[in-house]
Length: 127
Ligand SMILES: [Zn+2]
Image (cartoon, rainbow, N blue to C red; front, side, top):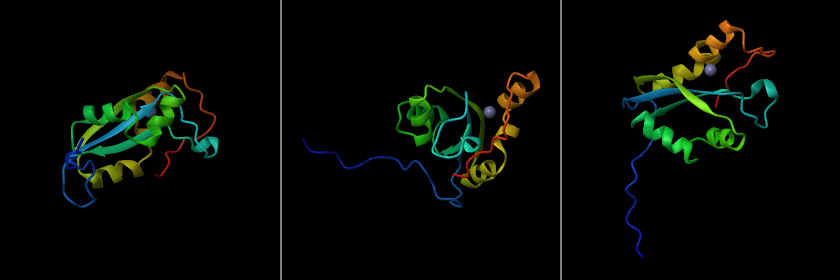
């Protein structure tokens, strides 16, 4: 059976291309275990998609998205999209530079409720 020519749509656009899309931030239920020291385990993921965030999320769910989501699935960690914003990849970069745990509404609510005793300052990986 002949394979059709690749009709895949490019999922990412280079920074400064001016292509608009959606910047989204995901908050995991708990930090994801990685090879890094525990205090660097990521709990948030900021990404960008030219397409509907929901379709990008479906890709994350079936493991074809970011590796972080595959790890989360392996570790039985759920997640939630906590923010979406219309913008280009520069905006994604800005969002990545900001402290996710500080600006995350879900983590903020947890902190205010005092349900989450965080002994360590959680920082976002600069990936
Ligand atoms: Zn959060």
